[in-house]
View 1 (cartoon, one colour):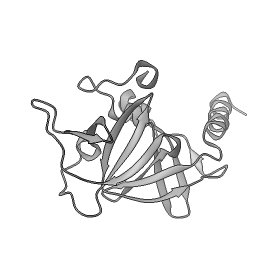
View 2 (cartoon, one colour):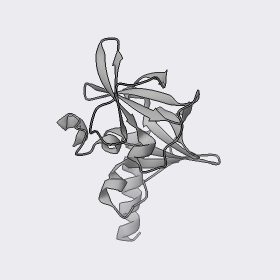
View 3 (cartoon, rainbow, N blue to C red):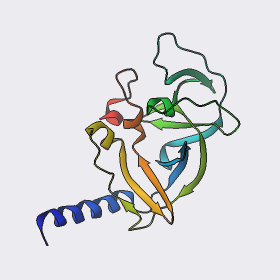
Amino acid sequence: MSAPQHIEQSAAKQLQADHGAQEYLVFTLGQEEYGIDIQIVQELRSYEAVTNIANSPDYIKGVINLRGNIIPIIDLRLRLGLPARFYDQFTVVIVVNLGGQQLGIIVDGVSDVIIPQTGQIQPAPQLSSVNETCRFTGVATLDDRMILLTDISRLVATNDFCLPEKVAA
């Protein structure tokens, strides 16, 4: 076995150890499906009006008051550079807990929960930008579906929006 094959197989084994029997909430942005670790998901909500924050980037839609907690709301489409979309009855806000900070993430819809089995998760593709590669932890292939598994804390972290150090690092 050559060194690159050995390294690739070791990386695949580590990936399986990291993701094995883990549950993911699957959400959509356009025609693409993404998976988020279900352990950080607190609740799913329909989109509701937000309180705008002056001079914030377009992807930070504002804040909501959720049972006494002020939660920032981020449009993941805009954060990823996708075109804006009209919010409708299928638009969902996924409320997540990232290192003790709650955050609402607007997505086009939520489809199901998956538990990929050994061999169904491949390493994330090496993209041109290191930042882009770090945002995805792998790709789950289930029948004819390909689901990008995300590191949501890296997906939303920017200079405009700070997360706790232990999550954003």
